[in-house]
Image (cartoon, rainbow, N blue to C red):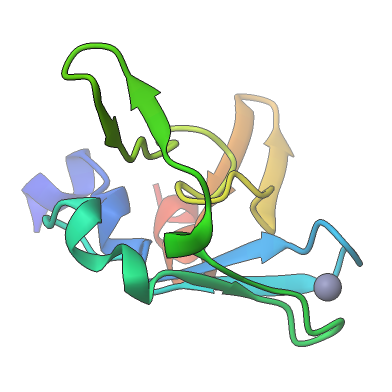
Length: 116
Ligand SMILES: [Zn+2]
């Protein structure tokens, strides 16, 4: 447990991410993320859904980024930013604090961060 406390395993929280819907600004969900697995293996399960305005996106249908290194299309996750790693939508749980911006993927993640 002490190891866990010293370094947040943010990927443990990517299966359920609370984001701001880009269409109506309501709280929406990005689901289907998995930790410790390459994104190509689960991208078909990743989706955005807003229950307020019914806007939906399937991650597998979004364009992939080109990487010049292998000349092959590859997914790039947006990590360590206050946005979801798949679509880049703003996270719902973002707080301004004297120490800087605090952000979390969901309430559980936020509760954990606030403890320390
Ligand atoms: Zn919406």
